[in-house]
Image (tube, rainbow, N blue to C red; front, side, top):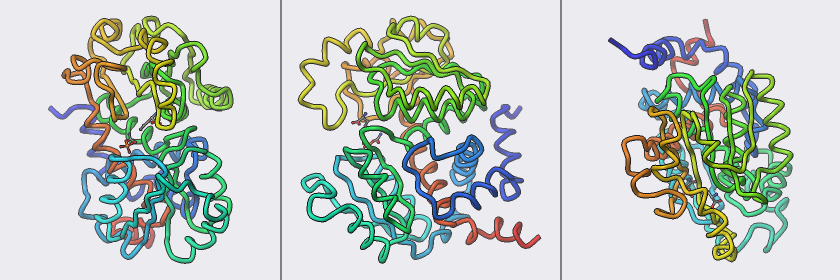
Length: 347
Ligand code: CP
Ligand code: NVA
């Protein structure tokens, strides 16, 4: 017998080109930026994930959707998943990616960010940025006529959170009412997970050491979203209490890129927040373990947990591709080139 999740996916496969969330998102998001998950409505988050599942099922139908579209990726920090998911994603939809390594030349140093934007928009169709300062991304977006996508800043990592909730939907069918627990540093990945979880109706619990809690602006926005979606956001400092009854336990490195000088200080502070078998045992027996990767094995998570059958970290990594393809399709108007969507528009 088909599982609930499989049946839902089959229904989506039949009607995706008529899905009101996807059609509305395609109309609203074309030409827009994605700097923060807060830029997206709940319906738009749902639409990206629905389209992500669809693209994952039927990749061939999208292979000309972005014909000749040019993407530039300018990264001030290292990347494996984000870069490769964008590059393979646009290449498999007919477009092209140009990677510019900014690790030794921060954006804004050689010329103003506004002037970089005014050049790039003359040549490319989309700008993908990985930066230290979040303002670099919003400033590029404010000065560019082509979409700008946040591929991670110190403040947010929207592409990661979209792929993560796509993986949770695959595993659980729906994430509404799911008890999602994040343990660790309350920074970029945590922020985007809080916002995405709230928009999808998941109960998000965050446990951080004192002094490492999420930004108050994100907490406020996430709580407003959660109220509208009938779920809740909890902030704790006790990882054991946060893990109690969880459906998913997520962690990230304790020392993010750019914070390496704090490694020695942070190690003892984050040690009680390690996700190990004892912490996982507080969660439901059906709980999954999640991590954005790269992982510092046996620091924030033990080998026993990340390599266990409960771990879905490589499903998350795989879904970076499909979620980012969906995002590109919506921001670049690519559905107009996909026959089942264009047929639907003529009806
Ligand atoms: N999770 C993630 O963004 O991985 P990369 O840093 O390798 O892109
Ligand atoms: N918080 C981590 C995420 C890496 C994908 C960092 O910013 O380095």
